[in-house]
Length: 298
Ligand SMILES: Nc1ncnc2c1ncn2[C@@H]1O[C@H](COP(=O)(O)OP(=O)(O)OP(=O)(O)O)[C@@H](O)[C@H]1O
Ligand SMILES: [Mg+2]
Image (cartoon, rainbow, N blue to C red; front, side):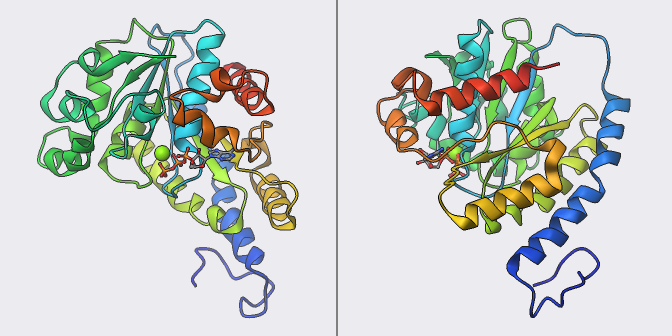
């Protein structure tokens, strides 16, 4: 197992796995302040009329990207904001979680990205507006590979609806391929849902590098809005330790909101609903309202 930083004081062979996470987190942390300075220098001060585009990204699967996209979008809509949620994952989970069938949806985000169809053509009114994915999207990366400006297809598509929304929330697949790069290129902010466990922390450095690469070459506006601990089971020692690591190394980048593990999140999509609609008074719904409040804080 190689670490991208100087070896820690404890020899790896005898250290706990958490030492690996510590040194990895330090590598990421080392660039954090520089990172926010660069972002501050690049961020335009003047408010614009364009929507704030927020991407949920983490190449690790099953960390609640889709759950966060939908429930954050609905929490923002509850507060009176106009929200578009975009499903950029060929799995179509966001599309399904609003009761739409990705096997039937046509046209879909594939046609927006590859054929330049207007995003309005694939947008369905649900709890929030949803730009739907279908399984075709799996072939979009290959189809886009030879396109000029392939990283900017989503950014271009969003221009046409810039006046219609206050926020655009984008769900991405568990990879850092061209679909995720398109999302990051169109975005202002990235939210990184992370499951509070050791193995989940290891992917953060790679994600960080991708964000920096996109900022450098494609989109100087891009900033990490925050890291969101999800699927938290506070009863386990392991989750507590992983959370402590996150707090230690990403303190000022961690959201205050923590999303606990509850079966409500698995139940709601089966009904084609957000948790905020399925069980409005639950702690689960409240967590995403809290997140929305954090996101809106100036
Ligand atoms: N706080 C939570 N408590 C319990 N289950 C949750 C929670 N958040 C999400 N889940 C469930 O965990 C599973 C994975 O969540 P989700 O689909 O949002 O992750 P993802 O990161 O989008 O996955 P993928 O990488 O495959 O797209 C889903 O079944 C979801 O219902
Ligand atoms: Mg998903």
